[in-house]
Length: 275
Image 1 (cartoon, rainbow, N blue to C red):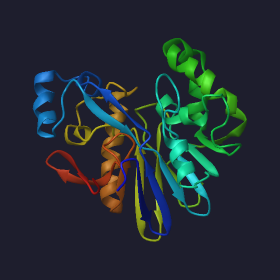
Image 2 (cartoon, one colour; image 1 turned 90 degrees about the horizontal axis):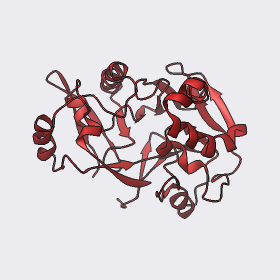
Image 3 (cartoon, rainbow, N blue to C red; image 1 turned 30 degrees about the vertical axis):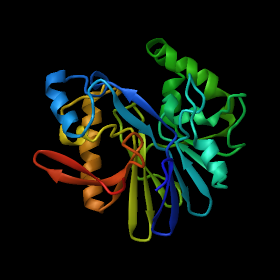
Image 4 (cartoon, one colour; image 1 turned 180 degrees about the horizontal axis):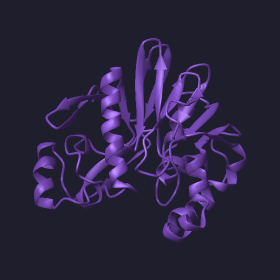
């Protein structure tokens, strides 16, 4: 496996997991309702440090009839140097469709180049209509001014490409790719269920940001908008993955973020299937 790309299949679908970049966060951000003395031993057992936990940004490209890109990475927002567009060009992959799971900058930033141009041309961008309505509201601008400003700069310029979708569970977006409603991280956050032949992959986006959120269901993530809903979504996701015998891909787990969820005690356990 390359350090920044990983090819695999889901049934007849060809898939490419992409490492856009890394980011370092703290335990206070990831486990906001837990003191350091509780969290630190769990992180130490995983070889992680409480003050410097590394997360990956892992978009996914899927080829069915055309190439579909799910999330675009951070692009050039801030001091970031996202690699999605570069890696896709190197792999001679041109997305014909783009799905954005929610409007946080590390998922949509790659839509626009540093010159303000469309990174992937005039292709349809599928986005939950409720998410789009939410970020355009006056309330959002008042409560999330920095995020609202970034959306004005990096999302509004390609509004004409948007194909709003209903965020109904199992609503088909494209053949073989369906909505999984996993709210909590944002009010209209979605995952994507990918199905081909008898194989299934659940792309969970930010419904799971760290494996300990599966093992410790009451540990709240500071990046989630609604902790109660986020917990409910994690449980529903875990149960669905087990029921469907589906592989799971997380946007922020160590690259390529692919594994399986197993029951363990009162919670669940993450088993990475690639490393």
